Length: 142
Image (tube, rainbow, N blue to C red; front, side, top):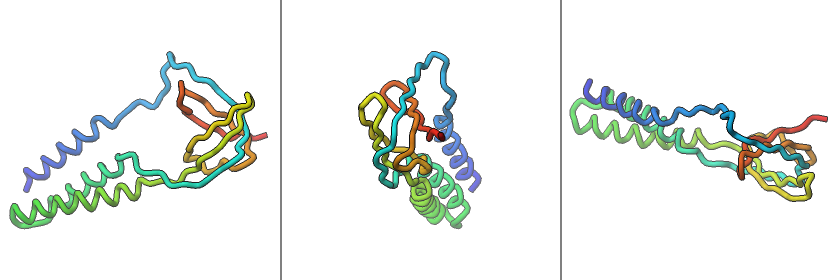
């Protein structure tokens, strides 16, 4: 029984060791800001990035390791716990988002997806770009 607990803890640490990233911008990065008006907004639901599923599966298998009296039932409980935990984690990880169409001040149009639900049609926004990707969108209050 203890062997399974240590194996699950080791697997959890191994899986999550690659998940830590530094979200701070580097000084060498060049970012550009653009401004525009939101002309269209459509609500949508975005999928989990995979982290919720991994966390749920790990917790489910860890909890499943405490169930069962012999090797077969313990293995089945671990498997069932990881499947159930993965499903629950993926469902929790889904999020509401908006698909925005923005008319930029330069005359171009831009369409992007954001989790910022406070931005609506008619809002003036600032889009901070990191290369070809938009890194951040902010609503500008008058």
